[in-house]
Amino acid sequence: MHPGGRHLLRHGGQLQPRRKPRLSTDGRHRTGFRQCLRRRRWIWRRWRTESGHADPAVDRLRGHDIPSAPPARGLSQFGVQVFARAPVPGACKTRLMPVYGAAGAAQWHRNLVRIALHTALQLETAVELWCAPDTRHPFFRSLHRQHRIPLRPQRQGDLGTRMIHALNHAQSRTPGPWLLIGTDCPALNPAHLQVAALQLARGADCVLQPASDGGFVLIGTNRPLPPQLLRGVDWSSGQEFKQSVQRIRGARLELALMETLWDVDHPQDVRRARQQKLLPPLNHAQRGVVSHRSYAGQRQIAAQSARHSPETAD
Image (cartoon, rainbow, N blue to C red; front, side, top):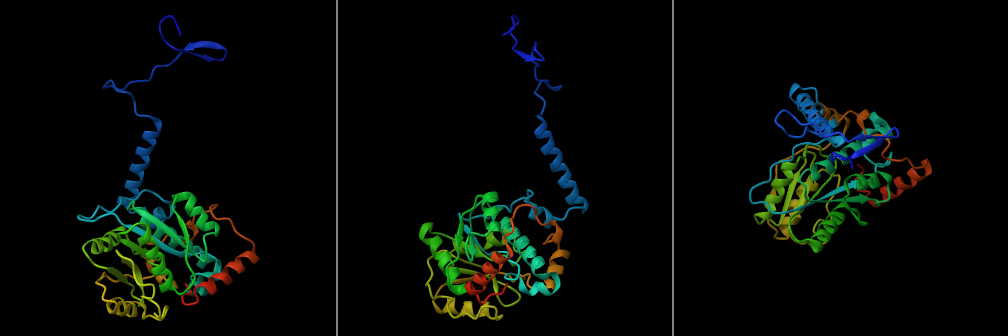
């Protein structure tokens, strides 16, 4: 230590007095460089949003901070399960392939999965990613590393059997309101999830949110469900929602229904989502995150996925 009481640093072979931190005009320490940078980024993002230069869908895909929905009054803690299949070209979003090709359809699927996952994560509640045919795909692994969420494999069987199994699995570990969502509805937002959970907290046994194509985008429960509750539903027929309502009410379960949303299944749905800025452009997908397997490996996964759920092509 220097006789004057100041620490010394060796620089260029010489001892020099340590610089004291600069103070601002009010006598306080100046804001650090990183804090200033964060402040400037926040101002820039706010300007982009207010001036119309921002694309919210691109921000969602890139994981930029988006204000969470305010907590609903009287809402207890709940969990969200995201059902997704591996983005294997030729095995997902097949109805987009005539326009975008197998690789383009798979890329749209990746974007939809990321957006659905980001919607669930905004609520800062328990989130699980249920993967088909299993959790080994590099895309799922990258999401696990990025968001630190548990990956769980979907069981064998039709879509109804797999959904009931996932919901009951969650109820056995953490009883309470649990929601299960797909990845085809970018119009689904955190407020919808809060409303669904609030319906369950107020006493409903199940909650369903229908889709305009006859299916549904969300199902939730606050109690274990009969394993055969949705067995026999004709999936991908346009009657899934109607048949599911009949089976749930036939089991004497109190059912709450929500507003109808729309899925991204066809090329015109992609254009609609782009116009409403619910989806980013195809070239804004995150690069360098997912490693590509060999062509033979991709075909093997596609075959497994087709056997896993023959009812749902997308």
